[in-house]
Length: 331
Ligand code: SF4
Image (cartoon, rainbow, N blue to C red; front, side, top):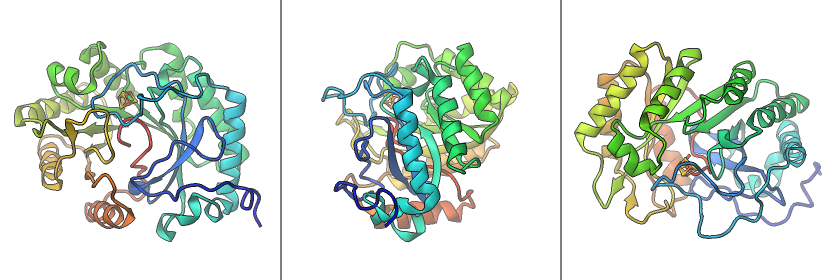
C-alpha cells in the first residue's frame, strides 16, 4: 500500500462545496477540490491566526471560533508540503481520504496555492514561504507545478513582496488579484477596509505591468440586491485603466459566492446575473473573461461539475484554471 494510505484518519470526502481547511494533523497545508481546475489544489495557509487586512462581507473564513494555531513554522510547513506533494507525485494521493472520493475526471493536482485565512502577502516572511514552496515542488519532482497567489494586492508595494512575486515569475507563478468594485464607495462596502481603493488599483497596475495577471472579481447580492449597472460600468472602467496604462490582464474571472459567507445578507447572484456581468466585461474590455456560478450551499459534485465545468468548456477556457478554493475569498 502506498505510504500514508493505510494510516490516514477518517476524513470527509472532498467536494466542491465542502472545503475543510484541514488535512490530517497539518497546520498549514490543506487541499481542496477545485472545480475549474478539474483537480486538487494544494493550499498553503500563511494566516492561521485568521487575521486579515480586509473584512470582506462575503468572506468565508469562520472567525467566530478562535484559531488553534497563530504562528507559521516554515520548517513544519515544508514538511507538510513534502508529504502531500510526495503523495501527488506517486499517485498515492487519490488512494487515501479525503482524496479517494474525488471523481476520476478531477484526479490531478492543479497547483500549490497561497490561499488561506487572510491575505498571504501580509505574512512577514512571505518570500521565504514562496522559496519553501518552490523547493518543495522541485524536491518532489514536480518543477512545472503552478504556484498561485490569491491576493488582495494591498502589499505589492513592499519590496520583499515584489521580490517574492519576481521569484514566482521564474517558477510558474501566477497572481490572482482581487478587484471587486469599480468605485471607492462600493469597494468600502464589500471589502470593508480602510486601505484606499487607489492603493489597490495602483498595486494591481504595477504588478500587471511586470507580468500578465489574473483578475478575480466576486459579485453578490447584498440584502437581495446585486451590483447596479453603474457599478459594473465603473468596474469595467478600472479594468480598461489597467490596460491603458500598460498593465497586462491574462484573464478576468467573474464569480459569485459558492459557500456560506460571513454575513447572512450576502447571497449568490443567479447564473443569469453572473452571465450578464461577464457579458458586460467582454463587451467593454478586450480581455478573456470566465464566468463561474454560485451553488446551493449544500450542493454536491453533480451540480457543480456538470454546470460550471461544461459552461467553461463551452467558452473555450483553458483547462488548467484553478478555481474554487478554500480561502476566504470564495475561491
Ligand atoms: S475574503 Fe480574503 S481578503 Fe477578504 S477578509 Fe476574507 S481572507 Fe481577507
